[in-house]
Image (tube, rainbow, N blue to C red):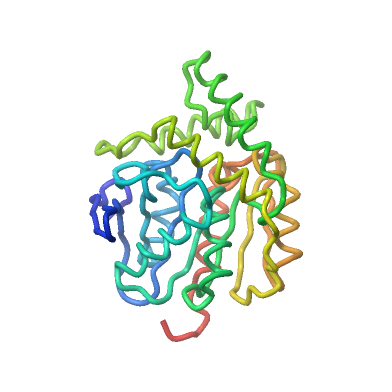
Amino acid sequence: MAYRDAPTRTVDVGDVTYAYRELGPKGGIPVVFLVHLAANLDNWDPRIVDAVAAHRHVIAFDNRGLGATTGSVPTDVEAMTRDAVAFIRALGYQRVDLFGFSLGGMVAQELVVRHPELVRKLVLTGTGPKGASMDAVSRVTFYDIFRGAITRSDPKEFLFFGRDAQGRGAAREFMRRLEERSDRDKAVSLPAILRQLKAIKAWGRSAPHDLSTVRQPTLIANGDNDRMVDSALSGELQRRIDGSELIIYPNSGHGGIFQYHEKFAPALVGFLADSGEEL
């Protein structure tokens, strides 16, 4: 099964009904995908999802108040993290690999610090550490929403990719991949995005985590010109997490892993491969 064909399922946790999709071989430790700002289940690059799902059980979900998941979007990353933990445990898992992109990478960091026993491996892409200023995220987001509106384009074409020929081409290809699925998730509302932006700003202004406590194998990746979350913060994450690996893709921005999906997907699959540990 390909991601474009994976059915949308639901699970109830308290008063929240979570929407999720899963694919790939079941059994062992699943890979949980934590999605980015303003995103729902339809925003994962199917080339990356399918590459991982060829080897591992993949689970992607809409956090509270996003897409088809009920409830209100939290205004702090800590609450988003509690929701992610509740969702994972509701599916019956005691250990997972985490793949977080952008805001999802912030949730992944919060989760591994608060619940290290729940995480085997960690993937952080297009993100930065707690306490590093994230104020640029709101400014860039609003500016690129405006640019998208006046050009009748999806804002992700501006937010994720450069505006040279290579970036524009990568943006068009990425959007075509996202449109492969016909059964669409519920769109994310502007009020939901504003609540997410509030959470990101507060997280960036909070006291930093001591990431030296992270013992899980960690892969970090980004483009070399991320306008949303400064690319230098990926290097800062590598410095703070002992033994972590860093990949920086050239001439690319926040969506570098999507622009270079043909390189990133096999690197991700290799990193997530079992290292001989019992699953």
